[in-house]
Length: 302
Image (tube, helix red, strand yellow):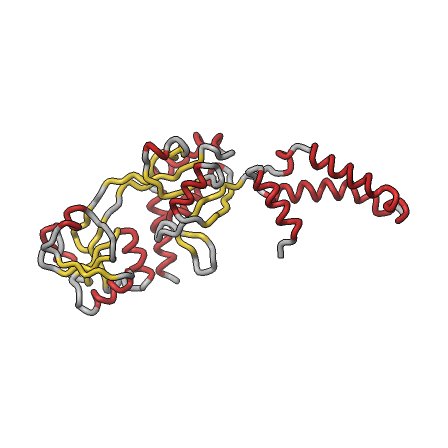
């Protein structure tokens, strides 16, 4: 259990934008070296000199460089769940394709990770003021560039929409026109791509939860349902339906670059060049695809 001293120390170091773990070690070493030898002194010594000892200790803590107490090598990550890219695990841990990639990137530049839960918009706001160092899954916009460095290159370049059908019926949807006259499962309030959203010849059956579309498909109440490809693959694997539900031949592909961003106020800005270099290696070597494959393999074996 964390005591009051830990909370105070944490607040002290947070105020300086640093990590409390290192300051705890530094202060413990300082005080143990200061007071250790005094433990052999008589009680009368402490009664007479304790006010002076405490005053001297306080002065040392105030004068000692804060940077010595509060050095850190841990990136604070603004986390907002967005499967399969960012996932809260059953044990409370942090996972997903983005997070696995970020762990590899951080390891290659010699940094650790600390996760802080925020809604996505709030995470970007906290990065803008330097309260978090890094956020994943960000589209590049000019207004964001004044507060954030975009780690180059983009690690994801498409936002595809896929149609999920019963196994063996993949060829029933080979182009957009094949959707006409069919009943498609959707999510209430969701937008997919302009031609689909505006086409009144497609019968749409909106539901509130993704798993309901899987159930309706198996029950024969819809011909197919539409989802972002990666999210659909994740839910299919999670529900154990890869043997009965498949993707139709037609996939709507939309070019959309997705980045990790580093706060311009982060103390780790000096690592940006190396982050860019390592991200390029990860993208060009195909490591991202291997990370994705390992993620889905683990998901299937749970």
